[in-house]
Image (cartoon, rainbow, N blue to C red; front, side):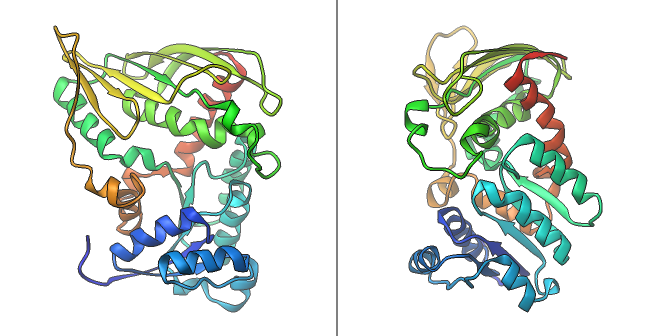
Length: 322
């Protein structure tokens, strides 16, 4: 944690629970910030939780009465349906650095449109895939390096459709649930195992609110590692990533915990990690926000990287080969 006031000022857009989590981190980092929200109810809840009073009335009204030069950057933590529009507003206003909650837009098509629109602005946009910053993930990456790389990996992104079905979401969010939610796991798996060089994907069945219910596929990464994935949203399951090296099989299941199986053993052991920041704050959020504040942009997912990854998400969703 920082003991000195940081010479930065952030505009935090949104006043819901995710914004509360960001506010806690910004306070711990001693970063000045303002919050802008839309409604009185969420603003009151935000103030009760953080002690900070948001400016209500929405971003458009805020922009009319404030200067972008007052802020070194912005963090967007609105609802999924507002991410693209809010990012464009901030870029047009003149904010130079933006961290936007994953997946940056309501759909893959909207994300691609956002990328095209951003070519006319000088704003750097980063997508907040905070699971890359879990203590478990960072320790796993160290073990991968010690073992000489990844030889193969598996991942599962099963969603609990019986829980999601009754949720009230903005139009189009549930219909794009793989992009809006499952990419947490898919992004993490390819971050750890390597980007696909070739992949075959298969889909089956559907849900009333989503075009596909069952997914399977496999491929080879740019580094020569083999991988496979599956998800069945109509059956029991959970998110998970398994990484295989020459010496270990490493499990993230749940993603916040690291388990390890050593060569020559069938025993799967809990691997100790120093995860105090992931227990004190929303997991991964402290180090992700710190990287954004202090310009460690190589640790973050750029919008251009995200658009490249969208080609993989599209194939997983629609099936086929490349």
